[in-house]
Image (cartoon, rainbow over all chains, first blue to last red; front, side, top):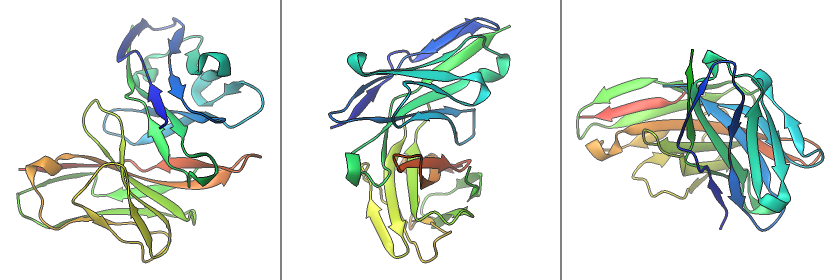
Length: 116
Length: 116
């Protein structure tokens, strides 16, 4: 079965510092991967997605992610963090290949705290 | 992006009451989903629908039920609320996108339910 692991439960960075949030997946076929962000008390907002092609994908709010098949990873990065980036970040994988009907498996999430 | 609406945003209710959480989307998406999310935890799929009159149970067993009479509307009902139902409930819908024609899910703001 597919699984998604986000090894870091909580990360703290200073405003202006760079950020990398880790995501590892377990999936037999070509994965379709997503990063979502959730602000407190809110729903999930799609940051970016990887379906195929270029392994470095750009998203909203200055985020990017790199798909590395050899490492089964899809890490999220941002060169300079803003205080408004403080939120919880979820990595997800589309499961079941062609019969997925859009169902996702989510990681446990990483809470990002930004210090001024 | 899809426009997905959930009402109420917050609900505090006593044990034994019947409740319905509303979810509507205006984009004409066929596929819709309900997730349950406890604080600090990942999302668990509890129901999904591929279209009108189609509903299926998800990964996490839930005492709630859903219906899909109209494409845009996917309400969730609890016949008799209990404290164990206290959680956040997130609704999503998806559309095919990209050259790979994979589903991308878009989320509503969520309903935070507290059962006393």
